[in-house]
Length: 212
Ligand code: SF4
Image (cartoon, rainbow, N blue to C red; front, side, top):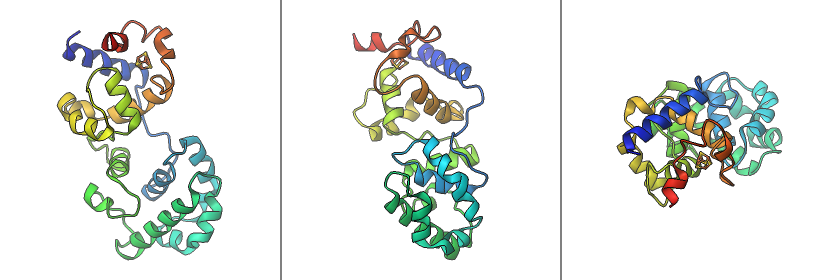
């Protein structure tokens, strides 16, 4: 199969599976989303959403979040993995937003990365969700899917990140990030290839072809 037709099949498949994709973290404003993204490292969106049902009621601005202080934030999020460091980062983020950024969240990757624990991937996820920005945030999962499908042949997510714009153009990338996340989460999982039996996937996934 040529790369061009494989890409079309893949993009059509993702559109069919996830016609209206969106991030699965619950949030009502950009501050809540940023906090949820910080909390979501090595945790599931379900765990984060559960905690945030009550935590999000405790603040509505960066200053209010800062005024909770680190200890209270720790208490609120203590059921999540790495809660100590996440509480510290949320608190420090709120301080910077409240006092250096005039309560506003920056809108560029460069500025976002100045916040504690906001890496390039985190910044991209935030901008994809809030601005529909044409980015793909490559983590180990996206790296796995793109390699299994043979779009890239790379060893690390960083290498995949560098290659990805050679595979998909900017128009194709809109919505692709959310679709890829849903795809690795519900189909192309890390542990096995159980979707080989899926009617929609079994004849079109090129994994076996790539590993021959
Ligand atoms: S068979 Fe399923 S899990 Fe395996 S590479 Fe294909 S889509 Fe992914």
